[in-house]
Structures are given as structure tokens and as C-alpha cells.
Length: 346
Image: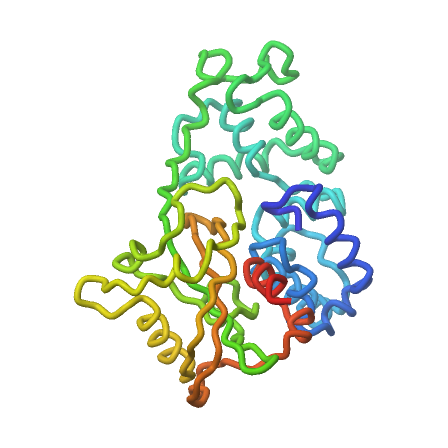
């Protein structure tokens, strides 16, 4: 849970998770949907799927005994060199190396490594150095110490070199390169995307689909959702700049303009066609509910959440859509934005 998430955010999830799954066997026996529901809101859901799969592997392949060595740990789903080294050293005091953000910076400076520390050659060099330097007697204390030094002393912008206990051994400090090492990562280009989430309603039921393994948020349920192509974005009358992550749309007329988009049909007609193509259901009576702005990896997403009514048609075979009552949505694992939309509907 602590990978890519802050401690403050994790604590309530951790407590709730352990209360429901106090043992490896209880986690291994659980349905994946329940695991995802308890993880909902933490993001990076592959971590939850891998955690569940790892528990099942430990019960099946390791007789329920947690592996102690870094090599054995890396046989489990979702556990790479860093996680294996952290578990082996912190839980079992095994002399396993750790290279994460703080030790990557610290070790790069100690050995004055002037190549990309995130590239293949740089990673190979750092892991080799980390394996060589880790204490054989007090690995847990050692790894915690170097992580702390990296976080609190060997900082990215203003390292406290003169008070650093490793100053005498630091080749970067000796050469005056501590502000140039490690080489900076190439900044990711952010792509703006507009997506539409449509809650198709039939009485008190809504249409949802479980996302597949090849999709973002695999295993979670969501409403009908698709990207709005660039040629339609100009028809959406929503302010481009908003500090609020979630804002109520000003009204139906501001979203679905009746003007023609070049030679194309009106926006609401195109959305209806998209929903029918995905689900087999014809819809009508659109009503915008909320706009949610969020980010996923390299995408900055404006998600327009809309409710509409069924007007006929049959569910498309094999599309994976199912009808759920509004009261059932609380038990389904939803994407974070899906949950925000469901809460608005409730």
C-alpha cells in the first residue's frame, strides 16, 4: 500500500484491510472483487490484484509460510527487486539490497555515477553497489539508515553535505558534482484528454461493466465510458480552467449544444450512437451531472458525467455490461471517479 501512496492516506486502508483479512489464508480465499473494493481509492489497482495473487501463491506453493529470501520473494506476483529487498531486510534482517528514490540519489552521488541511474546500465551499477555495501549483520537498520540519509540529508536540491555522515566517502562531494548527480529524469509529457461517463438508467437500475485485464483499472466496475474525440471537445461549453477537482456542470444546454459540428451531427446524437455501439442500448433524455478532473499516469483527464434513460434495444452480447440497482453499487469495486459519480447518483 505504501508504494506510490503517502503514509497518512494508507493508515485507514491498512487497518480496514487487516481487520477483514487478518491472515494470508483469509486473503487467499477472498474474491478479487472484495479485495479491490477494500482497495478502492488507493489507485494503482494492479498492486491489489498482485497482493491477492501473491497470498494465493504463498498458500499454494510455500505451504503458507512467507518466503524469507529476496530471490524467493521475487517469484511472487508483483514483487520486484526493491520490494523483495525491503521485505527480506526489514522483516527478516536478511542482507538484501534496496534501490529506491532516496538510495538511488545517495548511491549515485557516493560513486559519482554520471550516467542515467534509471537506465539499464545505471540500474545494474546501482544494484551491484547496493548489494556490496549492505550490512551483513544489521541489514534492516542499515537499509533504513541509508533511506533516511537520502530523504533528510542527501536531498535533491539542497543536500546537507557538510553534516552528512558519509561526506568523507562521497566522490560527488569531492569533485563538486553533488548538484549535477544524479542526472535528472526526462519530464513526462502530459496529454489532455476529455472523456465521457454515462450512467444509463432503466428504472432504478444502472448499466455497468467490469473492466478487462488489458484496460486501465482492470477488475473494477464502471459506467459506460469513452474518450471524446478532439473534434467534439470544442462543443463542450465548460471553462478550461478550474481549481476545483469536481465541479457541477452549469446545465444541460451548456453541454449539449444543438449547433452542428461542421458537417457532423449534433453532439448528443453522436454520444447516443457511441453508447448504442458499445452496449446495444438506445438512450435519450441526457442530463449532465458533474465534471471530474483527475490525472492518470501521463494523462490529465476531464471526465464529463452524464445520466440518461433507456429508450429501447437489447444488451450487446459479449460486451460485459450488466444491470445493477443503485443500492448494489456500494458493494461493487468501482474506479475512484466511478465512485464519485455513483455517490452523486445516490
